[in-house]
Length: 283
Ligand code: GLU
Image (cartoon, rainbow, N blue to C red; front, side, top):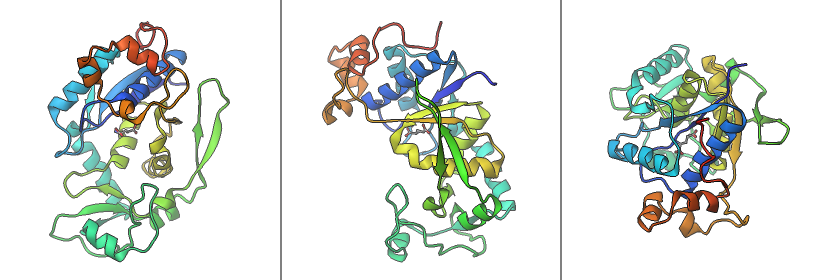
């Protein structure tokens, strides 16, 4: 058995807020219980929204919370050649195709069907067309992918102190998902499965908002010959009394709390992580 390794993988497109703090602290707590470690990965594939100074601020906010991570901290912006190579191998196998459609065109051409994120399901307009001169995205041909890896697809869900459960994954509900964007040779879905595997991640702890994405990630892992970690999708953050944190507090930046003189111990206690100094992956 490989030693347990988790990761906290924020996108530096703004300052961290309490929802991030909860996820990071939960990762650290679970890693500690498993006698494993947590890596920090900066998911900065978006060249417009992710800025280097925001990545530094993420690291600073986490350190303020008492969380430090093994070096080196991976930044996805430095791994584009790996993502490009994976896209190329999928292309050679006929599993992705170029797409020039704009959001507006997709909206106009698609029916009522939506993917789990609520976006219109891609109607397949560009499938079977030659590679265009114009800038284009790359989409998974979900029909071919499922013909290659018919499934059923499943993954193991874990929760601290509870028995594991097997979850069925239904990647088809994502349709022909984008794996390479027009501006960068990857999308979140492709980069996250490649990096989880490359970093030897055994347990993924992330928010419930990403639970549906796991269905697609499991298929991509099969297609790329990568292992599937165990997953825990955590619910909304609650305060120590079990009440959902008020929306305003939940969306408050850690930096703002810090500026108001709130201590990291108070933040941790409020999020239900007792014992100010006991959370973390250091012995
Ligand atoms: N970078 C993603 C986010 O900030 C999280 C990715 C993941 O945990 O899989 O929403």
